[in-house]
Amino acid sequence: MCPTFSFFQFVFLIFLIGLTSCKVGPDFKLPASPPVKTYTGTSPVKKTIATPYKNSAGEAQDFVLGQPVSEDWWMLFHSCAIDKMIQTGFSNSPTLASAKATLHQAEETLRAQVGALLWPNLSGVLNGARQQYAGSSIGLPGLSSDFNLYNAGVNVSYTLDVFGGNRRLIETYRAQVDYQRFQLAAAYLTLAGNIVTTAVSVASYKDQVAVTKELVRVEEETLGIMKKQFKLGGISGAEILTQEKQLAQDQATLPPLELTLLQLQHALAVLLGHYPSENYVSDINLDQLTLPQKLPVSLPSLLVRQRPDVSASEALLHQASAEVGVATANKFPQFAITGEYGWTNNSTSNLFSYHNIAWNYMGQITQSIFNAGSLEAQRQAAIAAFVAAEGQYEQTVLQAFKNVADSLRAIEMDAKAFHALVAQENASRGTFVMNEEQLKLGGVSYLNVLSAKAQYLQTKILRIRAQAARYNDTVALFVSLGGGWWKEKAGERINKCSGEIKK
Picture 1 (cartoon, rainbow, N blue to C red):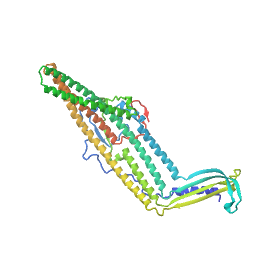
Picture 2: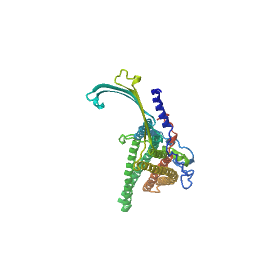
Picture 3: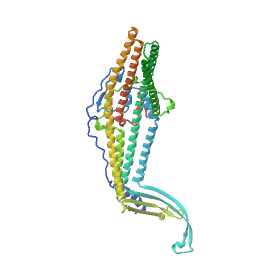
Picture 4: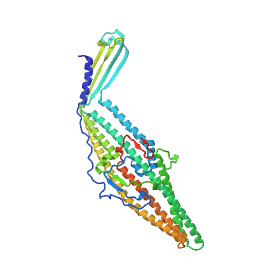
């Protein structure tokens, strides 16, 4: 038989053996969907209460069971400013850049391991050497000779994956790629949710600061009038002290509000990839936002396939399962085959002559005989790691359902709180307006008007907070349901404000 044909036939044969070998277990199976049909212990309302208000903030919100979440859910607020902030964040975020690079690293590592573990290692060798031969090595002292030696050839080495240990190892690298892909999706979802909620909070605190400043001004004006009355003997000193205390209390609330506003502005700038010193200003106005009225509520059986954090935890569980297979395969014999084919001669002129061909094939089987239980201990450790990963997965699923349940209840209660506070604000405004009218008729003093206005401003601050809570808890629902990331096509997002497509 021709040696050249035998060599390549040998390489092909061992490769086929590697492909057709068995693979030890366990085979990973997707965890079953949780056996629950609802997110909350009691049946949630299908629709929140409506509140007569000047914009959509008072509209009722319908919970639509089984409706999918939009991948661009933030566009439901109908704010071009929010859309642009989301695009800026996606383009500039170092967190996303890091997650993308980590995913790319995992993908390239997988490719490298596939090449190293599943395919024969074929390398070419070409070398030349100058040697001196000593005759004493063969019992002829005094005889020596100088000569050149040239070698050219091909080396092949391949570890037969008879029991599937290498393929299980590749499985762990694939699971790591899946994990990083889901981590990237989670980073997108988290960033979008944080941008929207932070922008809404900035708008809320801007309004609260403005109203609080107006409240302080009213209290100061009230105190000034009361001091004049005190000088004229119209009121007691105790009343002055009471008003000074009220003014001080209102003034004390302003610095924390202003500090929180500044911190939120700094946080928003960082989310968008800007430095806080760049003085990024958000132009979001609460009353210009649209409150989404149709809220999708995914079926509980689908939630585990929609949440990227759950999918990431599932990938880690898959990896742990495959590592059990790796540890199991290590207990079985390891088969390795090497082969060399080439030419050897003391001259390059006829190096590749048929008579200078040199080749060898070698097989090796390695089986641990005594390792003091090390291999079994490694397998048991891998099993324990799998059990731990299983527990972490189950906890992630439980937390996912809790997030959805919390969001559903929060939206329901937000609507009730907003309804009550709008009623309170309307009543306070009505009292204030009535006092203004009575002042014109001489029925009340100006102090009565200022007092009514102060009460109105206090209820207005509470209403602003409740209004922001409706928006932010709606965002929390979209995020807790997975944000529709699984429907996104190649990372393309359409900006409906400008018609551009952003990657």
